[in-house]
Length: 469
Image 1 (cartoon, one colour):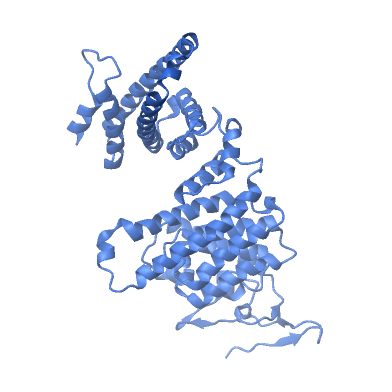
Image 2: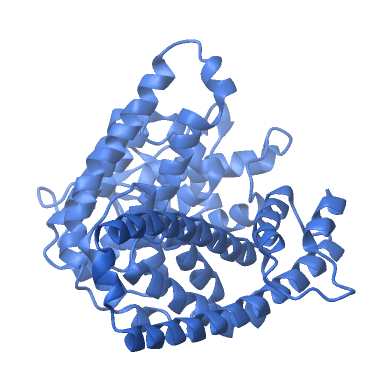
């Protein structure tokens, strides 16, 4: 039997104990669990007690070793794996989890948030937390409660809060429980009520991208997979998905209120701009922040911008509805044209081609509608149209002719550049069915229009795609 001696320190001053025992062990699920050996040789196992006592030992060593082992196991198990055949690792991970449970309430709040983030990043430990609803709810309340800590800087708190929330949103089962939805809304409300927007702006747009991602997953569950919908045993899943959807809808008004406050923020980067536009497009919302960004577009996107951000933004604004949109589209397109040698990644090429296809389809629809409107105007105002100054009309025709000629030349250069990239990707066998479809849609437009002079040895990409299929 292990004997332990405790001495009360400063009786009546602090509820504090000093453990002077030499060693100690505890069992968990019929196994010895000696955390002091695994994580902190200077601390005794009594720090595992689930009470609010304070014990005199150096907990920093324990926390450091927790970080160390979590990092090792994250590298070792990047994906979910079965640990039944690896009992040593399973036992060690169980130790990490139990040690975290024992200390998370009694450590510095900064370290608590950092350690919680690392735990949630590790998929195996993440599952352990998610599967225990009672502890999960208590943990989320503890995270929200950190806001009241005066010693914790607001910027650090919001940084960890957003990162923790973003990891939770990557799981499609988030919002299944009521406390999930409460945590999400409370986090957004805190940002909305925060007086200084600089406290949360560092990572705010990242959470927007995570919400957009979650909404896409939810739409696939609701409308994407018909076989799943037909095989639902009850209405529980439909009801749950509707609750998730309502939670996102309720959050929109809060986020749009935050947009009202940050619309004049001067330190957005190109990633922030893409995340904002992606969010507004995903939920089909309009906001004045878009107009303000358009006015300063030359500040956010330049020839120094990354190709992936340029292609993504071009795709997000490809549904042009007015002259301002079209001018922005042409501006981004010209930057990509100048940097076309950097357009080598397949994902970027795919986004770029999809944006061109969407833009041309939208523009053709606008042209058709414009012709219809002009026909009506001509019938009504035929006499007025005849009296237009012919010289001015000639100047306009020359101007538009020059612009169209220059645009055709640029399109021709891009066309043959894309064709060359397409053939290279086929040779390297990097093409997937999704990308082949995009290339087919892109080349088909030019194949039908025949805008380009065909040489005798010219090989149409359409034939290459058909043979490839």
